[in-house]
Length: 236
Image (tube, rainbow, N blue to C red; front, side, top):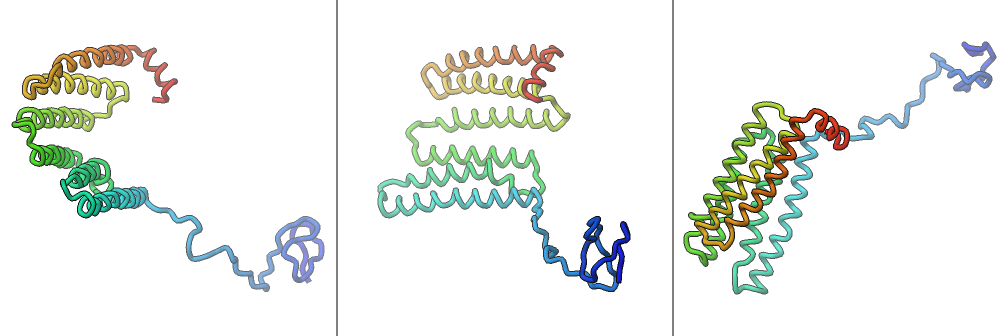
């Protein structure tokens, strides 16, 4: 015979809680029932973020591989007149290097990836030059200088960002400055080295348009009230 420890009412021998006050009954002489919900494995599997990223990258890689395989067989057996599937494979491989490969790297090294990406883009453009050769010396006079200049701008921005923590407005300002320089220099290279009509003029027009954005960002960066307003509106 047992009694409730809370209200003192007599309890039935099989009772699991008091019928009067609903206090749980703890009987040391009665073996506890095994909790059916308790299992040696957790209900929710906690996967590290790095593993999740690599898994997603693997799925994306497989999805990107399927169209290349299809294009290869279509090119080989249906349209064998040209090797157009090489362009598809090269483009997919370049996109994979730039966007997917970093997720597989455990210890990400920014400068190494910068050099590797620059080399990959250079070889990708050179492939079109070797396969086509419609424009003589355009690779050495136009494509390669543009790639190297854009790579240099990217390296400078990378060093600047990694040296010290920067605000989002200042980052946007430097990115716009890099874009303005890129369109101006690329327009000049295409106009002089590649003999592309109005390339330099278009580069100057785009440079002036981006300069207006740069002026607005400079004002936002120097004005505390404007920065606070943008922080409230954009949550930055």
